[in-house]
Length: 536
Image 1 (spheres, rainbow, N blue to C red):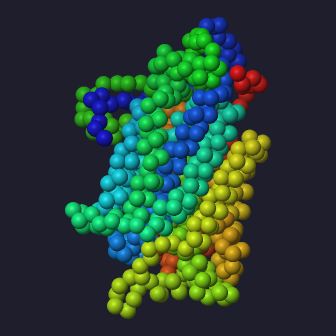
Image 2: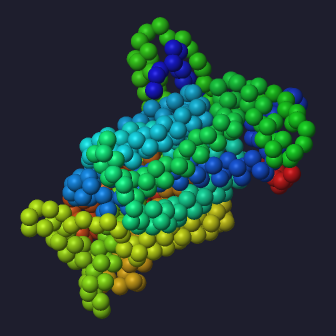
Image 3: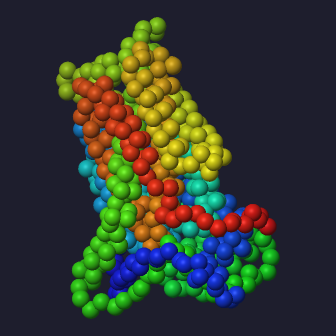
């Protein structure tokens, strides 16, 4: 990323409470929320919800698809358990390194200007990853992939949320999460179609044999290519434009939304008044070092998140994201390995039952031969894909259900229920002898990932516009730290302390559920009567 000649300096101005006497305004001025209300809810909103869901799906495919690759690529890349942990975690390391940068740029340069180039760059890196000749090369390429893909993963929440009113924002985010879940549902299906093929052909100039698992890497990145190209037809967030004192551009975006939604003539808008949570972004020239200015500006953009007003919310959100990601990504990276081990056990020991962790211990014991060579696996058991698909179907169904009830029950209550229930299922899976029923309890553990999107929807409402993207990036950065810790933590403990791995993760997650109860509902009280008309 080349820094621009001028670097933006963010001046955060907290808005106070408006007195009743000051509520009157000239007829030629309306608040942003009222202007957005006039654009209605229609085709444009559905399009941006679908695209946002696909962006999130792309992040999952790029980062979690490696879980299906590791069991079948271990001989080609020389993957020991330690190396598997590194390969699983390295994408999240790239995300951690870049999250702060993308959050800063999204809040100062614009949401779309960050999402579009980073997604396209991640696809290019994915393409090269498919031809990696050894473990260290693919490790570096997956690091770069994580660095770029982070630009869209957190910024998309702020981008999507700012095109919707308070009463439709949560449902829009749950809608995009549902699309994300449908995309995730495709991952085991695509893995089954691509990886379990028998073809291969040598590439002598690279010194490798191109196998189906390499093609699967490219397949996982195609969604990113589509999303990056599609963003050329989507506008910048009008709320961000208004914050950046680009009112005319904000009006043009709102008029475009209205034309797409209602198919009518141009929407006439008077002067727009920023919302209470929408501080002004000022641009200033700096004669000092560009790097120093950049770092100072980014520091000024971050420190408000840890001021007294937002400190409690920031700490709770970051802590919860850390443990959710530790389970969802850290443990999930070993999901195909564990399920595949279970399936192999059932095929070779019909009618015999063992605890989940006992099967894992046995599998690890037979992974290496006496001569030091590794047990090579060219295909995964069909049951592995079946349970993965079952998990994704339940995942998508959960989002569809949450989209209907989230505004009635409340995000905090839903988060508490999700975390306590699904992590408890994970504990039950460890205690039960392995049967298909025990496997389903194990699958249910990973549905705690639904909480990531609910927490993201809640986080958007906890911070003002000028801090929103940075808050999401910081919280998700902590989540990715959890992913890195999780993948290596599980890799180190699984073969010797399998039960302890699940106990620590699940009990910590349940503790986070009680912390969530102390989150405020939003940054402001929702007052005033909302219009019931939301359709053209």
